[in-house]
Length: 196
Image (tube, rainbow, N blue to C red):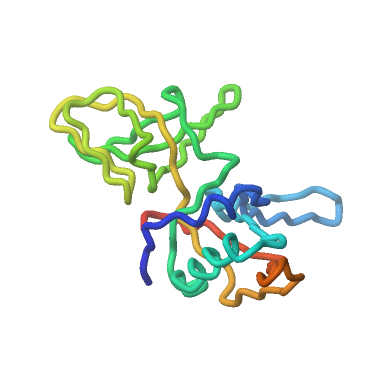
């Protein structure tokens, strides 16, 4: 289906519950020993942005966004407030060709490092170090240079995501004058792997 370049509303994603997850099969034998099979090599984010009681000024943008996304059909940008900013020390590149480089965010713990591919950088926030005349593809996260090698980047990024439901079940909670107060108990959102 389609990728909507618009970001899921920040006022609604703020306070989302969730983050990265993995899929691991664990088999425990009769002796108590176990074997683990890591099914997913990379993480996949999942969030719930349950929408507490809101006045129309807050819930109407969510209704419109859900309709535009057509439930699970279309993908969009999502800001994970727990992990959206990269420092120059964390922003790295993987060479694709001699002039194109994929943005990654490096996570380091002790001697362990993990690189996460960044597909949706937030253009106005990105600073690139190194390389001549860098140009950034904000859908894909690929930097193209005329010469040289970019050595790092800093800025913000979004997650490629979709709704994990085709039904938006709203509940009318109360009235505030002529306005209805509406809420949703659960709005699941999942990361979509790969570039839009």
